[in-house]
Length: 293
Image (cartoon, rainbow, N blue to C red; front, side, top):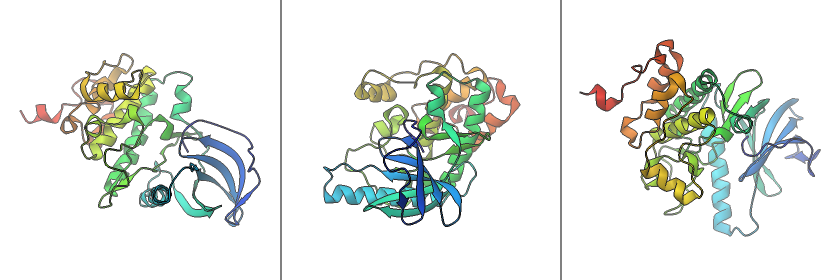
């Protein structure tokens, strides 16, 4: 449930999908699809239903790739059983196109929140704890998210932090669905090694976590420029402008955004830093290169 926030009825309101899911109102819209709040009439519960957007200009191979990406989103998320990861219930066909049925989380996205201002370091740490817990669970299941960003972080009205939209996730051992030279993800949150064409790993998701926390505190992504090409170059080559509002999180964020994946803290250490009061000192984290001295 990511992308531009929308709310209210649409032309499909009230329509029954797959003979079971009654569309109630739209709750999100992005480049890949529209998310609805729907009523599961079989189990009498609310769900979120993601309709995939399809260009009329897609050829058969591109349409097949879209179908496979959708199935992989469902399979990837279904492999992860964790309260900080959205639960996938079903994949259904609607008018010849796949839809993903997920748990409904009453929430706003972090991206929506940041349209109205930044968050405090304490709130960023709370959000970061939920995100890193979700990523640890995903990586343990052999799944890379590859599109961690504010729009894919749900902030539940009950305080829950949920990572969603595994639409371009990649499972260990599966073949890639991208063409040679094609890059998937949102450019502001793509790690330097991916910009340079290297294979992504768990450290790439952690870089995106750092970029998300940086934006949450500073109000902008760490390397954003006027164009995507300039942003990609800055991510790969430019030094980081240190965050000014991060407080005790400064050292962690700077290290998560290191150009070299080997310098970034592993997920378990990052989670520990986000949880421990002692992390408020600058000595709470020492890069691996310094630890080996």
